[in-house]
Image 1 (cartoon, one colour):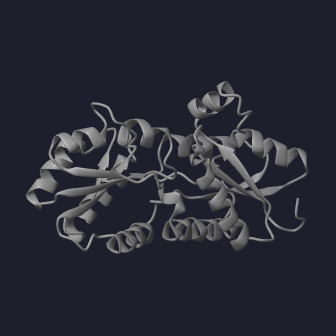
Image 2 (cartoon, rainbow, N blue to C red; image 1 turned 60 degrees about the vertical axis):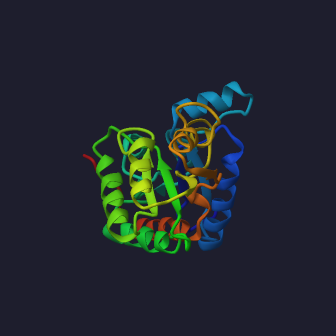
Length: 262
């Protein structure tokens, strides 16, 4: 462990697919920005940890396990940076794990947490509006029943107001589905659709719920509605604009006061 520098624990949901390469690329970005700090990874999704284990991929460490390892090595303070997109269930579980740790912990917030985060995401998305008025980019996010669903709703509203309805966001759960998105696209006279996951990585949800050639997938449903659909297996974790938001959140956490839930 680098002496004198606060370790940074990056907490992602995880993936049991080859999309884990996205984490490796993000790791390089964070190490370049924070060369004096030890970088550790932890994974918050129990289902994914179980799936990786069942596939013979070893053990993905939980946030609690990584914090325990650091405490055992004599670490006193740590930054725990969420790589989730919203302050949902896994983020709150991460915070409780940090609160139970003997370490002094500061928390780095998820992607969509503050007004400037939404502004930066909107500025980036404005650069993605297709030049051909018959084309559209449709992002598909996970969605949630957690009260943090409001973050998705705010982003959808801002996209609708600013991006000419040719960059849209749909959700797998608890939000606009392919039928509702198709109606908007038809009203805009769109013919060609690019599908991308509004998720950190293009993992199992992308392969099964978005791009799979089967009834009920986003690709299939949009094709049935008459669109020519091209899925792109690129999670937002690959985007420099998204990486920059997480870097800003880490920088803020490095100077924040430690978590206190007593």
